[in-house]
Length: 447
Image (cartoon, rainbow, N blue to C red):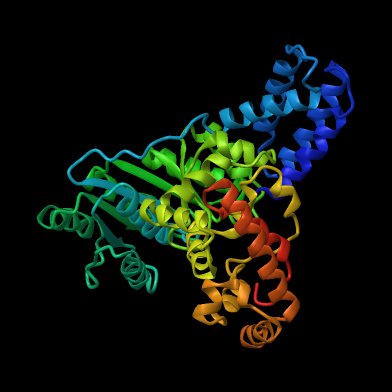
């Protein structure tokens, strides 16, 4: 996420490395490099110029403390200014109304329909809502079927009228249906086009007028950079939407859309898509994103994701096992499953301060634990509960059964023993240790 921008900003800060104080000369040099980095990220020139001017003004007005290096001070100022540029603080989705009506807009290919399904899952699982998905894209082949599949995946009803080609009527009928079936949120997926055209704009404006939505969200592909901002401007002039959704942030994103869109359309970014999975949706926190762009990690979001998968009863059982030195490979498997539910593995690792840079160029896919799971599942129940009996012949059998080598089995057992000791000392969860363990194994077959 924003790897290229982060790397270029890090190089810009090196201008101040070793400097004893902040001066107009060394700050000007740094700002020049930062402006180049922003332009390379597809931030428009006006925004980049205003941003660096603001950072420079605040930096020159600061007195550097003895314990703080100039580079550290400028990083702090940059973080605050980046957060301000992206909206300063998170913006909540409006859920007033009975039912709440949310209208989704965007170009074709922006990830609009997928986001609609993700939002339904988010509202259902995290806010305890009963959403209804509405298929109002009557043009794109298989659009209705796609929404139906997504609805089935997330366990949410999809309202559709296959023969009806009038999106206004479909949306109005869906709201009536929601009232009779006790759905408290209606999410309307509208048609997109490959480019902005008058017919598209008039149609979605008609839907808006007919259903009077409580919230209008504009979905934009973050990989399109400055084009995304221009599209947002056109949609905002017609719809006056309430918030922006940035999709595909797990791809090759330069960052221009995230850094520019707020200042151009004066509308907050409310959600970001972090993976192709249906749970790959996060509420957007400008301050946390600023920290990640500057390589400072995002521990708060990491903890929040962990808490969502946290089972208090299971944790108490696990603590007792750790205290009695009874933590086995089956328990380890349960912890792996919890970590996998937290999201994209490389994204999770990037939330740990300093890890983003360390992981540059390292390919960690979502099956990062596949080899470890294969080895554990090749063990007998007795071996999983009592690793001490894993002698040479047993290890050879496990390696053959899991498609790995004896060296890899030995490494797993050794690291498992080390982690068990650490967990006993900490008397807590071992998620971070397991992720470190996964990183250290790098290049294991099946990973």
